[in-house]
Picture 1: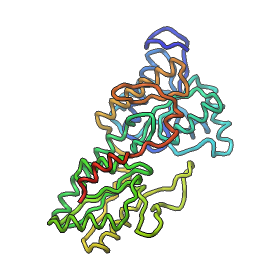
Picture 2 (picture 1 turned 60 degrees about the vertical axis):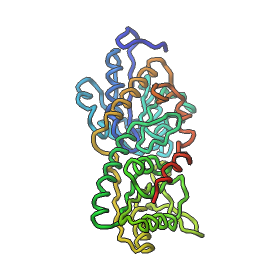
Picture 3 (picture 1 turned 90 degrees about the vertical axis):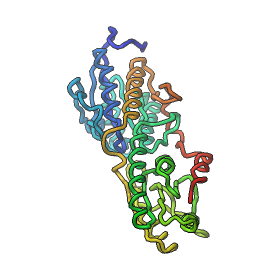
Length: 355
């Protein structure tokens, strides 16, 4: 299908939009941009409720101008979301393909799991899908940044700023646990922006002993408080023993363990080993909530407009991506081929400021 300017005369399309995986500031901005672009052309837009689950059970809603009015600054997603994997649900694939048969195109907004399903549907079933990269973890390949990351980073940085004053007042060590399953972008950059004294991320095998050594060194230099930032996916490790994640025993539909709690475990170890009073703050879903930053609103809007144009061009199996200051198209398969993790050189820069 040839591309056309908004408002040009051409066959009407029926375009679906879904949001899958964890919620993320900026999702509504994408929905708004895709819908407005499509409505300007006279196309029909259908919201798929609760991610891939909506295609399985047929739960949809029409999206018109009134439905997207005022949603730009809202957090979350008006289409709701879920961590449903149609390839793991009995009859899920067949139901998904049947629902896709009623659409001319589908815009899938999500992270590695949601886009992984989209890539597989395109590769194995020639599904007319277009992707938009979303994750607060900023760990998708083939794009410089994902929307939602800047908001989460800003929230984490503000929390660290606030922890400084109470840590100093009480001469305490403050451990701040942030999100980051396999990639430590939030922890590292918020730690750098907030002046943390130790940052622990999944990519770097730092031991508990080394963490305590850095805190001890800081106190020997006359500092009576310390800030430690740790990613939820950092593996707890001690010298001479195997590392392990702190996670709930059950896994989600994509096989991921539910992480959370490493901050409390680490705080206990620090207090026991150093003798310094230690407290923990687990930010959790606070990082996902609330209104997106201006940066994320603009990025999400640009992604949405490019995704709509990819639909009009018939460029299926592609994803909107940020390269420098340009929004370009890349294969969805490239985005989910591997995680984008923190490079050692960047961690080394932050490490120079530890202690």
